[in-house]
Each structure stands twice: as C-alpha cells, then as structure tokens.
Length: 283
Image 1 (tube, rainbow, N blue to C red):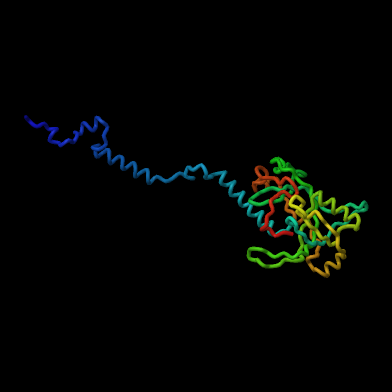
Image 2 (cartoon, rainbow, N blue to C red):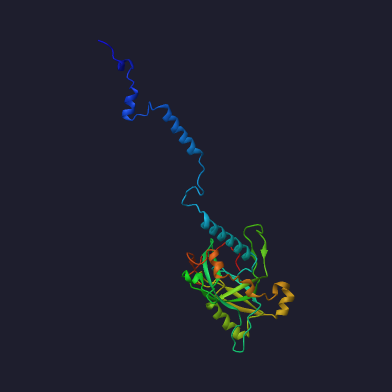
C-alpha cells in the first residue's frame, strides 16, 4: 500500500493546518519579526510624566503641596526664634515672677488679650491667632472654637534639665517665658491682682493638680514681691519687660490656608485635654 505524504512528515501538521486552527507554532517569519519589533518599540517608549500613578501629584497639585511644606518649614523656623510658653505637666509645680500685670482704677488687670485656636497640625498641638476680628477665619470655618486668652511676660525660676538633643544635660533656670492665661486662670490672677495692687514684681508658686486643669497651673500662691528695678539688678536682661505682641505670630487667612490650617485639624476640646508632650521643654 503506498505511503502518503502526510505520513512521511512524522506527525507534523502541514502549514495550511496551522493557519486554519490558529496555531502560533509555525507562524510565518514575517509575522514573528513584526511582533518582536513592536515589543522592542514598547520597551523603548518613554514613560508618561507622573508614571500614571494615582498617588502621584503633578501640575497645580504638586505646586500646592510644595508651597504648603515650605510654609510649614518657615512656621517651625519662626516658632523656634520666639519665646517659649510656660506650661506644667500634671502634678508639677514651679516658681515664676510676673513682669507685668498692673491694674487700672477699677482694679482690673491690664494685659493684652486675643482669641486663638489650638489645633493638632503638622504632628503637634499648635496655637494660631483667630483672624475673625479682621477677616473670615479658616479655622472657625473648619469648626474649631477659639479661646480668649491673656498674655504676661514672666521669669521662670524653676530649674529644668534638657533631656535630649545637642543641649542634653544642660540646666535652664531664670529664663523669660510667656504666661498665657485662659479665662479660668485669669479669674484667679484677677483676684490676686485686686488684693496685691497688680501682678508686676510678684513671685508666685504655681502648680497643676490634674491633667484636666489649665497647663499654666490652677493653684497660684503669691510668695514675695520686688520692684522691677530690683529684679533688673538681680537677673539682668532676663528681667526686661518684653512685648507679648511681638512674641505671638499673627498669620492672615491666606497664609493659614497656604500652610494647610483650617479644615481637617483636630481641635482641642478643653483647657487641659490635649495630649501631654513629654519631649517639649516645659515651663
């Protein structure tokens, strides 16, 4: 019996069979070359700007993010050059001397007052002056309630050893700080000022009995008085009566928005309810 041509191919399908069934095993060389060229071309094509990733920012969004980070850095740099705010941790006590706080003819304390917001911003609890007195405040619009405060220049006599950083181990004492009183503390100071004829020159022992109490202390006891001239002689430049207003950074609504302040920050609910930050330099 004669042997057919197909049998001689030892089971290999003819070229026309591969074409009919769609097999790629024996596709023409021209087609293979064309496919390879396409692959090589695809590899060499430059990636689109941004990589097409949803988490990347380009254009206006990237510019806005850069400007916000720049504003945050500048705010930190500025804050580092300003006076520290006095505060106590729970169950702490300190001794301070007021450099201002005279009373008027009615016995009322004369001190600069303003509204401010306390917000969790840029990884820390920060305070910002409310702009509502001059223009719409982005923090008020974001749902934060401002707090009325009064500021006093004081000398903090309590020694404090720095716990970390380049100045670790250094002891700080008799340094000028800002004493920022909320209404609750201001009522206590008002009673003292009315009896003592003012606060200027008075040294006070202050303590904070619980975390819920104001950070500047809720127990305030006068222990002695000196004239400003005597304080100047004893402490030198530390006893200079600095301008509280110059130590409180005021930022316009536009500046606050540029920093990302206003919407989305967690507001402090009470005078002493914000987390205690052990790494800060207290009082």
